[in-house]
Amino acid sequence: MENLGWIDKTLISSGGDKIGKIIDIHVDDYTGEPDWLAVNTGGRFGGAKRRYVPLRAATRNGEEVAVPYSKAMVKEAPEVESSGALTTREAEELASYYGLATTG
Image (cartoon, rainbow, N blue to C red; front, side, top):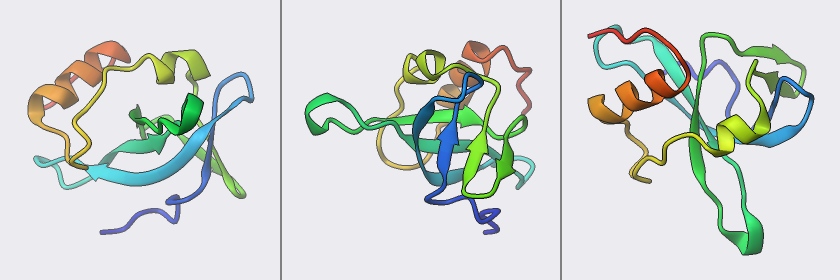
């Protein structure tokens, strides 16, 4: 899969805050297109958390990828099982959280 060269890049919020490292890119099962960035947001006391952010509004600038969401919004996104794959229900919950239309 084409990962856009974004794996291991730093994700930056709309306010310029570091959100975390991009650890994976999810591909939509219906379209075959990449649609979500999986981000390791870290956490206090080593408790790393995986959060998903819509790829559609992300832009790369050198070693950083910027998204139009606040750090707090990303950290408060619905939790997803850490299996590395999004279920249809999880993708729908995330799309609703970020105010996006769903497909499929």
